[in-house]
Image (cartoon, rainbow, N blue to C red; front, top):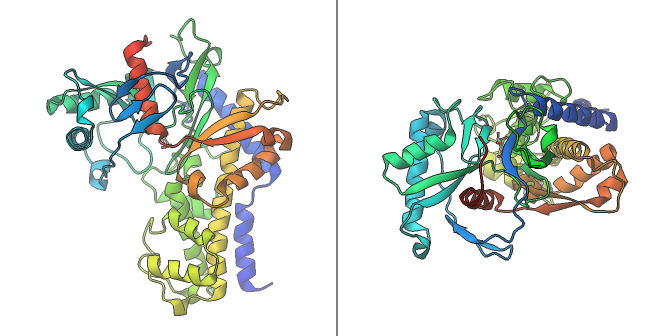
Length: 442
Ligand code: GLC
């Protein structure tokens, strides 16, 4: 075996996940679900959303912000993206929320359908994609920041209040009436998972299982729970940490937090791959690019996960060379055919491990909701969204392969994976609508 093969093989072994390992991770996942359901302040927060049955069934009518629900399960969406700078992400919360209010203002002025704007205050549903301990449909304290945010004076504060105060400071006639996480059920009755920049899962739990709820809604049998599974195994009992993961974690904005998210989400996969490539460049003797690197390749988070997907999609070595030249300034002369294979291999092992670990989360929800023992014929529907599951080549197939190992082929065959695109906006709109017509619990 050549030196190169030995190097690659030893790394590949670290990334391999046996059937037993996948099953052990899934078991710990279910245990952690139950810990989070039993008490507060657990790493996996298992946040009750106070969204209870009857869940919206897709027939509601009404207009909320830019989402126009047609009442026949269809909707039209006007949207505009606004970029949040790193300075805002890490500065004072007040500045961040002022900026959010400015974005809403700009949206109402430039994008909104002016015919829909009435005399009264605009009701707004806020999708806030961070862990929030919700106490009512329009109330919730920020538990912690994730995904590169660390704005001061936000953790422990009510996020709706922070935004409302910003609206009021700017005399905007907007009232924030509902708060949702982006993972909240978008297909209403099926569990929903996000595999994108961050990762999360939500599902319908029996209220009686949410043991930590002192003031549970008496007559409700079910409630949507936002698991915040990105924080699964922060204690590092079962996740298969490699030196590449530890390096990523140590240099991240939130070391020892969001352990699971760092293994499987779009924000981090490119960085893990970059760590592997640098290791091979630095190996003695070098096994990649003849030991050469570039400024871009040496840059923290310089390897975007979207590039991994381009590389796995590439048909020829030439295409990979072009990608490496265009994105990292690697001269063609420095890249051998073998190097292109090595880069593709690195992307593949990182993405495959991510897809397989994603399957442990999905399987854990199926087990928790008793869908695995129930050997019926019915299809098991799950809703997913996020760029990885939508665009990464082979992600779903790799996820399914792992599901077969964890819950068996019979169950895997019954799983229908549906894309729930535009889920965040519509989820918030539905919640704002619900807020105007239902009771909230405190
Ligand atoms: C992070 C956030 C979570 C969100 C997920 C997907 O894990 O903590 O709230 O749902 O990213 O955006």
